[in-house]
Length: 123
Image (cartoon, rainbow, N blue to C red; front, side, top):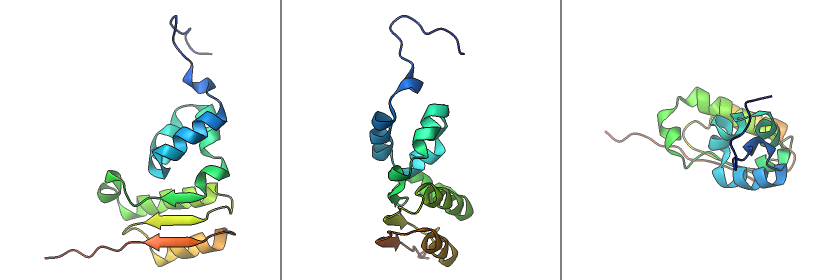
């Protein structure tokens, strides 16, 4: 048990899973994997619900440009695993490799679309 809450304060770990699911969906995969799902045990439990991972878009986030490809690939695999075969859409950028596409293909049942965007530097 933690310290007592100040008068009028809320215990955010007690938010219902359905409310957290809505919030996590709005945040996106990277935010959930890197932060929101790590807040407390109840948030981690909600962050692992397969329905959150039916559509995974890891293409439009500032961190994608700054992180190593192998780290992003590992995060993508966690997202795929959390979907428990319910992944329908996956969107990634430069870190999407043939191995990642095979990984996704080996673990999905309902996949409709995989999109990878490749960038080549212009000198």
